Amino acid sequence: MGASTLLDLLYPPACLLCQDRLEAWHPPFCPVCLDSFQPAQGAPVCFDVQGHPAAFETARAPWQYAGPMIQAVHDFKYRQQRRIGRWLSQTMAEQAENELPIDQVDAIVPVPTSWPKARWRGMSAPAFLARDLSKRWRKPLKTRLLRQRWFAVSQTRLSRSLRQRNAAASHRFGAGHARRLRILLIDDVLTTGSTANACARLLKEAGASRVFVLSAARTPAGAGR
Image (cartoon, rainbow, N blue to C red; front, side, top):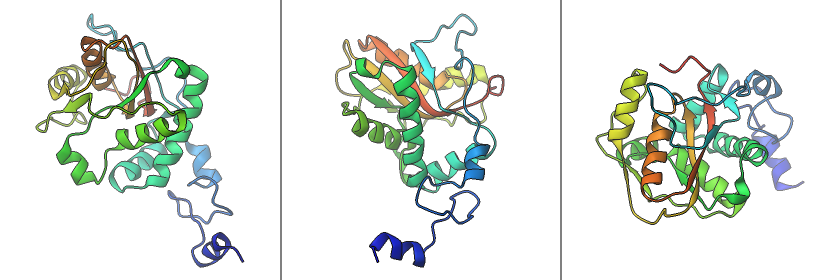
């Protein structure tokens, strides 16, 4: 009897959302929970609001941040469910390989998380996803190009206009060289695009030639305040 078979008998694999038993170690979710996730359809989040065009070229995400996907992302970010993170990065990669010029990307950069938040959560979700994608595509991972100020205010409860101002004030360029780089910026959830836009603008100001955004999920159109 193989080790994996013995483990399955002692600890039957279960869906990480509903806890129903899985027949095999396939995805971290059962077929019912998988079917409940809604693909992100239609145009990506538009940042061309109040005369502020996006600093990034385009943004993509495989899932809508709605329904059970909210709990899945929450469990990944706050309960350190790394199996969910690896599954999310795989679905991100599959979409990006179809819709983004991955072969042209020079570096992968995660949206930064301040060290107090990363320490409290146990990890940085964007950095985890970016690391997985960097390994998959054998692209350089640059985690020091961007920094989030330690006093940054959470975006969660802010209005759209306040998100824009807060995102711009909460981030800064860190260390390293971005000149002429084509960068893939990684985040876990894209809401109004304010954070991605602020980060893309900093990278462009540092000399990056193009910035593409890839997140695990995005808020449905009209839901971001």
